[in-house]
Length: 439
Ligand SMILES: C[C@H](O)[C@@H](O)CC(=O)C(=O)O
Ligand SMILES: [Mg+2]
Image (tube, rainbow, N blue to C red; front, side, top):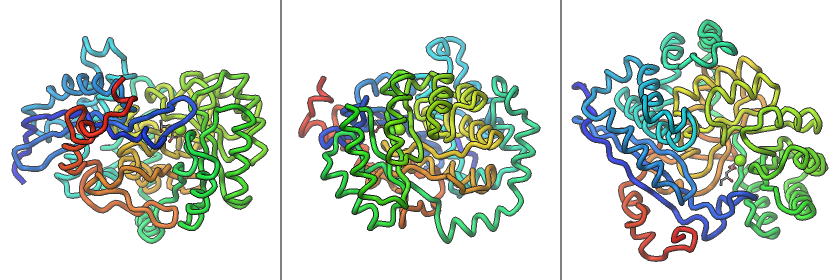
């Protein structure tokens, strides 16, 4: 293979009008138009690296501008100059001496970093002819550790501890891979329980989900207490006592209300309560967990590895919900997965949106093959929307993700979908502009 040179970075604003049908709605994000700042790294060889960061519609243009700015840094470079020092690249992209003031390592600029860093991993994996999970699983423990920024997390996880976890993870890897090839990776569905769905629709979708082999279902809560409880009883009744049910409040409550509401919802035997309060409130989560005895999950709005470190150190969470593009891409997620393993907390990634299922399956597979080496209490979120736009969409069978086999990070969107959903010029937005997009 000739040297791969990243010649040009193209950045697009993509938006899908999901709010029209209340798809993706929760108590706080009532009208999401699943969207993405999308990056294409064009090279001299014809190979392309694709990456996106997930947004909800308005504001995507801010991520797009941040991504355009950051992407200039890779133009003209060889892929090898980046992959030979993956942590150096991470530090360069997240540490621009003026731009970092806008974060650092959080918010719009960190979302943009994720799209770019993930696009580089997609290109790297394609160049190696492997899916990202396999690229990672084939790397040596030393190579994985060399991709991680330990500056702010070494007090919780030292590089030597990460190496020991990864060395242990090499044992029995072939057997675990064979297990995934046969059975896939366990998943749960959120598609039956969106906030804007009627009670009849929830009941019907649960029944359809059961018929399709789902055993774990998530419901959006955060409405009036009586409404939440009624909807929760409907879901529990529909799925029966033997299946697992989770609830997600999407940050709706203050800590004391969260405690009260979590105790009420415990009636339907919830497997976890997700984002009960502000995502930044590490000690608040610890208190909710302590005072309710209900398993607490969070992470989809957790800015960076430092916050995950504190959630783990403070005993705030039972479930670590990594997000493929809230933090700065694969590198930072490697750090979080390793910390979760050290603290004995299962990783159950946040997915859904657009492309998040495609991305996170690679991270969970790597976690099972090389880090935690366990499937116990681990499920990847699944949401049944927008997969038709991907060249290598996720494949689900009886509530399990099947192992991705194509080279790359499974995130490349079809050219016709890029054209149709580009905002605001794409046909999807010219035909019928929703009120939420027009605001
Ligand atoms: C706005 C998003 O759809 C959000 O509700 C997703 C989420 O919280 C989840 O999937 O979990
Ligand atoms: Mg959630």
